[in-house]
Length: 334
Image (cartoon, rainbow, N blue to C red; front, side, top):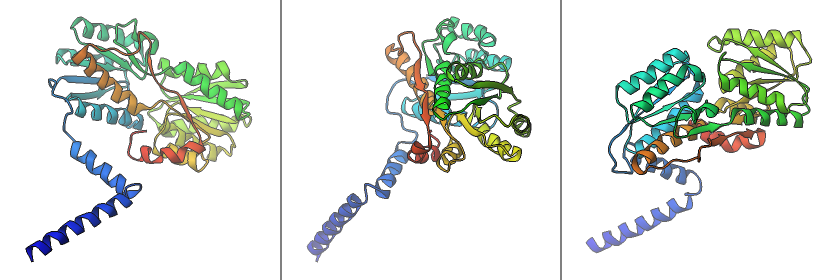
């Protein structure tokens, strides 16, 4: 009887293995991947010291883009046995003070954005004087090397803008509105200027207060009502795309809404045709690579880029690619 039970157990185990293998290409594989991810949560893949890295960005409250950046950074921090600290402020002076605070804590590495580089220069210099390696991310590619950072990770904002101008040309657009939601952000200016450089039509800039969505909507709506010839609205962040769509509806406009950056809402709107296209700069990759490269520098003296930015974009995403990215945007990694 004991031998019979043993053979039954073996048979059942074999049958279970076959059934799991049969479904591994669909839900079974995803479930297995999820189990592996859960098992790895909180476990470092290295035995290097538990260094502390601080990321300080110019993000305002509630910006989903920076949630994705953090997601990548935190995942790399788990793998690299890093104590990861995140802080942000959309006021440049306050952001600089946060960098100073990280220096005072004697962190082992700093990741910082340079949306308003003039206000950040002294703080970054103080970090380097203290012997803390710095990597710039997302904004500030032109200033990064001059400020003494190891490298910059992100997209070239001018090149990204030029890609948008080319795409508008392909779509036959003649008059575009570029909506800047953060005045003083050099990256935003570079994006719009890049669009103007390659766009064969007319481009107008619209400055709005990005912290007040009702005001953003009313400002875009007023422009569309006043000028029915505007056939494209380009927003510079994913959260503003949906607001622009609402403004278009209320204005009775037929303008196409296009946007920089990607999130789950943008992917869904691309898929159903509410949006024309999006420019993805892969924020998850920016966060992940920033932490990983700091770890590589601390562990092995490695630096990427050869004095040039490490580019994570741009990639033009249209309706055709939206479905394939839906799974990634839903989990918060694209």
